[in-house]
Structure formats: structure tokens, C-alpha cells
Image (cartoon, rainbow, N blue to C red; front, side, top):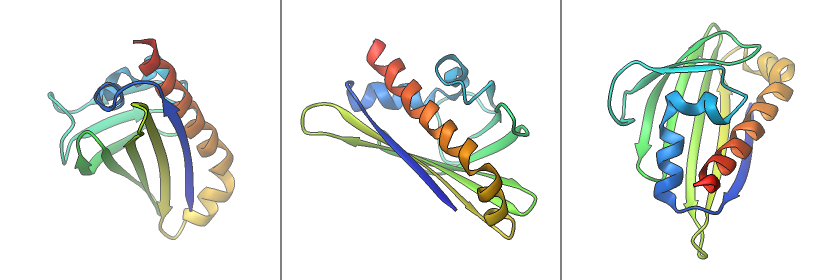
Length: 140
């Protein structure tokens, strides 16, 4: 199951990267995250972990599995029967803006059922994250 959304942000890539990777502050700008806690200090790096609490979902541990600062990071979370991968890609545009592409991919034996039952919520949370990221970055 794959879910995706994008938004264009009037800010430079370094600003958007800084906001997007400051995971503990996500609850300030997206209603899709109620609480976020990094489990190690310092910048987001390969292997970094965070615990996220989201409305209507169980708390989840996320581990960074790929990173290419300031353009991309992916992290994964496992639950019984489903592995969820979140991808955060920043694409610089020619006019100085940035396009943020957000993707959730679910795999595993229960992924089709999870996608069927929770797809609407996942799409809603991706949109909330994209809109919140744009608003936070454009605020300055």
C-alpha cells in the first residue's frame, strides 16, 4: 500500500530541512502528531530513532533507514504484520521554492487490510503534515 502527497513551500531547502528534521517540534505544526520524542540527542542521522504518538494510532518507534541531507530521509516502524516506511523528500524548484514529497509505504501480510481500514486516516495525516510543514516554513 502506498500513499503520497506533495506541497510547494516558499522557503529555501535548508529552512525546510531544519523544520522537517526537528522531529520533537512536529506537534507544534501538525495535528497528525500528538507527541514526539527523539531517543538520541543531536541531528537526525542514519539509525536515529524517535517515538511518535498520533491520534487514533498506537505509539510507534521510528528508525531512520536512509538519509541524504538536506534532500531526503526515510524511516521505518514495525507493528505486527505491517512495516511502515515514511519518506520525506525535498526537491528544490528553479524559483527558490521547495517541493516537499511525503510518502507512506506499508508492506507485510497485513498491509492490504491496514491500508483498506486505515487508508483514509493515512491520507489525512499526510495532508496535515504537508500543510503544517508549509505553514511553519513560510512563517519564518
